[in-house]
Length: 187
Image (cartoon, rainbow, N blue to C red; front, side, top):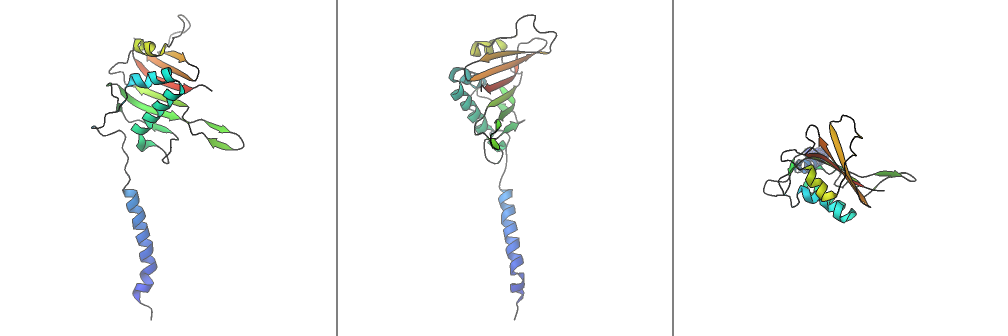
């Protein structure tokens, strides 16, 4: 004799599996910035000076710091690409408006995704102002030669080491506050 429980058993199993899957998804949350009680251990000055002083090792420290701070934005749980619009107040009071990291892709017998970050971009709030003068002191960066640029709404200052290059942009009209920084691994 076929009982009702025998007929419904496959449905109960399917419903149980779906409920378990849904509850597992419901348990994952994301956050765009660390809780207020967790203040980042690095400031903007360290994020800019580490790659200049330690080249690739310093660059990797900056990438690791950013991935820890924005861990919820990692894709597939790997350091594949970070791109967040979440503001992050750093240890020295400066604010990152956006941080992006990139991994280069190369083709050699197929598409391979590298395991190392090769570029970092930082958008920095102009309040408080991280001065161009301080950036030049940290990096030894140089600006464009006088008279080489026509009318422009920004100027870029560059530092080039043996493994890392750093550039920072300042805006018209005062050209005093850094608002965007690129850190790149030199191939």
